Length: 132
Image (cartoon, helix red, strand yellow):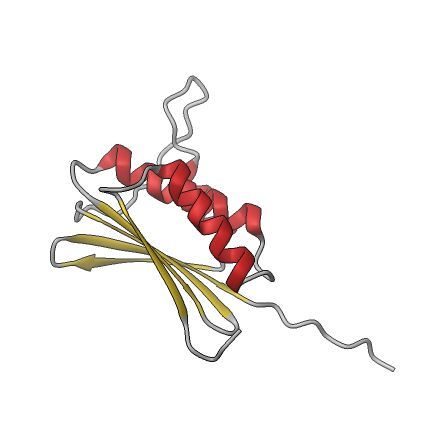
């Protein structure tokens, strides 16, 4: 991979959550083969689904790969941050946000002028050489 960050953007006007996962999977294969594909796709799916379910407007997925870092940003039209709630085993949800917090290395929520950004970051783990 080059030293320049690699970026892809998926806009809600052209895609749904399944398409976002597909784009993310291809992006990871090309630019972040070291990342845990299943964990990242679960986070992408959760964040996009939350944007679709809990906002009345647009969402945008940004994937950025740097040499040792993968950044997943979801921007959406709601200024309200995600809220953890008691899981509802009868189908009412409540499982996604805790899962995002557990699977991503770091998660931040930042306000935007027209909504918010949820950012999940993974760092490449270095492989330690065995001690002699």
